[in-house]
Length: 116
Image 1 (cartoon, rainbow, N blue to C red):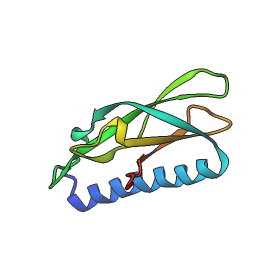
Image 2: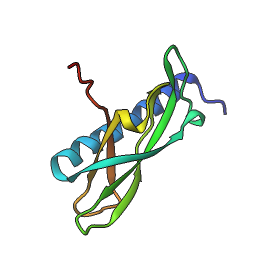
Image 3: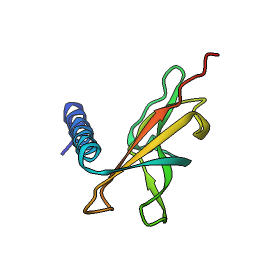
Image 4: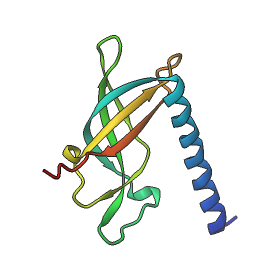
């Protein structure tokens, strides 16, 4: 059976909304860590696009130090990255479930530009 495009969009939105709900829950109830971005994984096979000055979708691999002093590596969800984006221009926060450290969400931000 062939999947119609509208069903694909609905499935993608459902996955996005589930991740957004979990991120909001972990922001309220979880433990927050500053993270360092150590690399990127191209997500082009996830159906991302290239348009204008945007490159494609990518997942950021981040490292953070947990409460026990151990370095943990995690991957974010898919983000649309610009051509010039690199680890030095981005910052990440990791939100981890207090009861189950395997449940986490990563939020990637662009660092502010100093206009001085």
